[in-house]
Image (cartoon, rainbow, N blue to C red; front, top):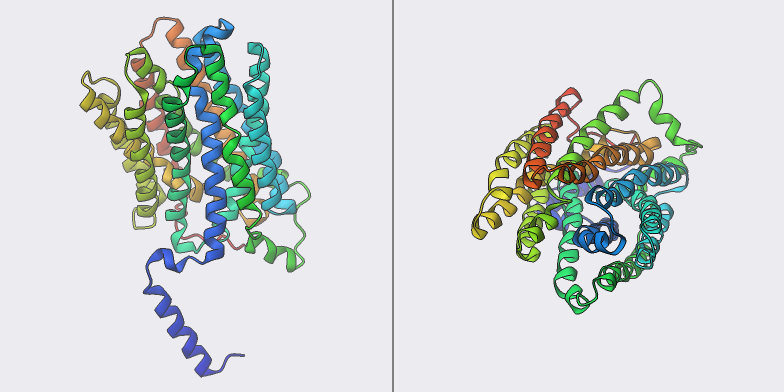
Length: 426
């Protein structure tokens, strides 16, 4: 039992710590967990998004229409559900770290092998297998971060973490801008090189992961003798959690539809109009990196997760005229920045929100299943928008309509509870 003097010293220590900048209040161990998953998320994003830049070349190599080209993105997103469910179940049973490392290794290998495809069918299969590992990254990695970090900074961590996706997208844009031209004389080789490059960053990420400790909340349950569920995926469909699972899936599903409505075909929109992709994608992703961090932090205020989601949705839709329908370069660039900051800012709340909805015993599979079932919903967008183009719809009109409908659907977040500040130790 602590003496009054010890209690006084502890109180003074807490008060002094609270006066430090927020980043000093996060311990070295907590930062290591963040950086390991953040870097993995960058690699994950890079490996997936590089496909958006080379769809035209793949169409030419294998003589497929835009619907089949879009289906390459769709099958990856569909298989994320399988991978996320498997990795999430494993993370609840055996801890967060091991499934996380295996997922990164898996998706890096199949991204690399995609460059050796000799037919559309082979590429389709490899992108499906790539999706399995991609799903595991989120399911095991996100609980690891949020179970390390202080509760009052979960919103900020959520936004910063999600920003890693846009750093990966920006890295893909830079690779396309500076490495692709070296091989552009032989387009059938150029798109393959883009896939081969995808394996390089993962090697560093795996080294980083070896220095990260297991989730303290998961270990606490294990050391307390609380047996982890053998198959935690069954837990999220029990009566007390089934609505949570369905509702979280639908909320994140609307976010996914927003993202793929305005993002997957955007490099093609730029290339079709004869514009360089890098300036606009740089503006979009810089806006998104800032937006996810800022709106994630704002979701810790009285706005909450639901209020911040509503504001970003409204302002994201308001960005569409500048993002897709302007004719001059300056306005298009401004629109890209706005769409990144507001339209993608909605994602700043997603990691924290989805993890706060589930108890520790099923957090890996609960958040992982919901996120990737949502990705399966969003997976329809690349294919649907490709099919609409094949039927004569203008790409910008199809993208705009899909964004508006998806944004309005996001308002179902108000049918569920506010999760800001929720205790996740149970």
